[in-house]
Length: 91
Image 1: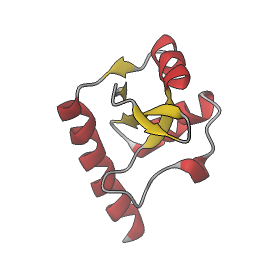
Image 2: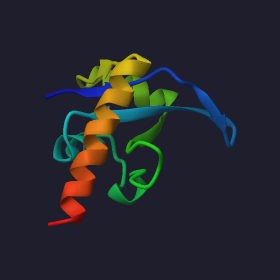
Image 3: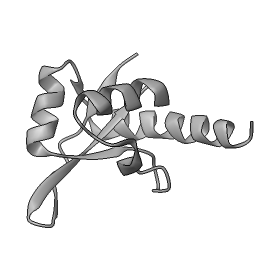
């Protein structure tokens, strides 16, 4: 299992933002908690599930063991998370 961050650097509210994803929801939420993110900040309803992180949080995530993910990797993980979310909602 792995955690990934991208280098999108999307400007919003005066900061640059990136995406945090993982191979599984449980792994993603555990890692996000280690970063100090609230589960309520999880973007479950977006086009693809993820957490938004600032550049400084992205750098901290990398120091904690996350991998830099290219667009293909991040979107692939997000698609898996979307399927997992759908399965959870239908249980």
